[in-house]
Image 1 (cartoon, protein in one colour):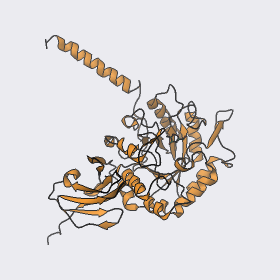
Image 2 (cartoon, rainbow, N blue to C red; image 1 turned 30 degrees about the vertical axis):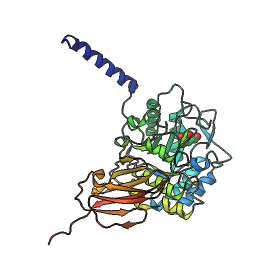
Image 3 (cartoon, rainbow, N blue to C red; image 1 turned 180 degrees about the vertical axis):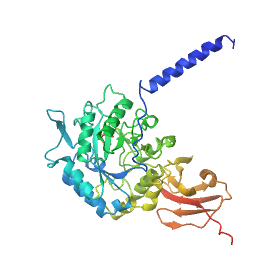
Image 4 (cartoon, protein in one colour; image 1 turned 135 degrees about the vertical axis):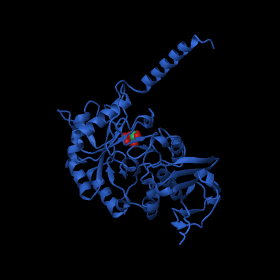
Amino acid sequence: MPKSSCPTLFFTLALACAQLTWAAEPMHFFARPANGLARTPPMGWNSWNHFGCNVSASLIERQTDAMVASGMKAAGYRYVIIDDCWQVRRDANGNIVADPKRFPEGIKAVADYVHARGLKFGIYSDAGDQTCQGRPGSRGHEYQDALHYAHWGVDYLKYDWCNTGGLDPRTAYATMSDALRASGRPIVFSLCDWGVKKPWRWGARAGGNLWRTTPDIWDAWSGRHGFSLGVLDILDRQVGLAAHAGPGHWNDPDMLEVGNGGMSNAQYRAQFSLWAILAAPLIAGNDLTHMTAATRTILTNREVIAVDQDPLGIEGHRALEDGDAEIWVKPLAGGSEAVVLLNRGTRPLSIRLDWAQLGLPGYLPLHFRDLWRHKGLPVATHHLAFEVPPTSVVMLRETPARPRASP
Ligand code: GLA
C-alpha cells in the first residue's frame, strides 16, 4: 500500500468508528449512577403469566398471603408485582388512575398490605403512550408517575416498551430512571424492551437493574407461539450475554412458568435450574394459592436458589453443546461451581462432564452434590458421566475436595 494512502485510510476508519459510536449512543447519553439495589437477582412473583389482565387488590393480597404461607418468603422471594391492567385512565391533572372496581381502596392500600407481611411491592408501566394492553403509559408523565409510585410505597417498577413510536429506548429508560431517583424512594428498575435494542449493552448505564433479553416466555419446552418463545428458545438467546450481568444489573430471560401446567415437573425443574445458573431474576408466575407439592418443592429448593443468589453474581455460560446434550457452568463464591447437565431431547442421554469444561485440571479431586436429590457423590477425578432423562436436567455443585489438614 503506498504510504500516502495511510492518512486517508486512517481518516476513513476514524469516521466510520465515530459514526458507529454515534449510531450506538444518542447524543448526551451519559451513564446514570447505580441505585445500589438488586445486588443479587430479584426474587418474587408477578401476575402476568397466570392471570394476565385479571388483576385486583384481592388477588394480589391472596397471592401475598400464599407467598408467606407456602414458605416462598422464607426461601427468599420478596417482590409481589402487579403487571399490566391495574390502571384505567388519567384524571384532568394527568394523574394515573387505578381501576376503581378492582382496586377500590387504591394502590397504596395494596402496597401497605404487602409491606405489612414483610414483603416488597412492585408495579408495571410502559415507556410509550399506552401499555401493551392499551392502558395509559408513562410517556410525558414520567416524573408525575414516579412521585405517585414513591407515595404509594412502590419498591419495583417493570417498564414495558409497547406504543413507543419515535422514542429511543436508552433515553426513554434513562428518563424514567432519573424520575425514580428524583422521587427519593429506592425502586428496582426492570427494563422490558424484549432485547430488541440489545439492552445488555446499555441497560445498566440507563439506570436499569435488570433488562429483558427476549420476547415473552411461553409455557412450553420449546418452539415459538406468536411473539412468545419456549424455554429452550429463550435459553439459546442467553449465550454470549454473561459478561453483561453482575451485582445490581442482570440479564432477564423473563419470568418462571413453573406450576402453570404447560410443562412436566422435570421440565419445570429444568427451567428453574437453568434460570438459577443464568443468575436470572426468579419471578414466579403461577397461582401461589393453588400449588401442587411438586411445584412448591421446585420453587423453594434452597440449594438451587443459593446458586442463583450467589454473592459473586457471575452469570453461567454454556461449556458444552453437543446435539441434545449441553453443560452450563457458573462460578460461585468460595471456589465452587454450579453445573447444569441439560438433555434437550426426548431420549435419555448419558452426559459426560470433563473437568476441562469446569476450567479445572483432571487430577483435581472434586466433590459433587446433587442439588435436586440433596445428596453428595463420592469424590472423583477427571470426568463423571450422568444419566439425564428426556427434557430434563441434572444440577450439581462442585467443590474441590479438601485434603485433611496435617498435624
Ligand atoms: C409485554 C411484556 C409482558 C407483559 C405484557 C403485559 O408483552 O413483555 O411481560 O408485561 O406486556 O401487557
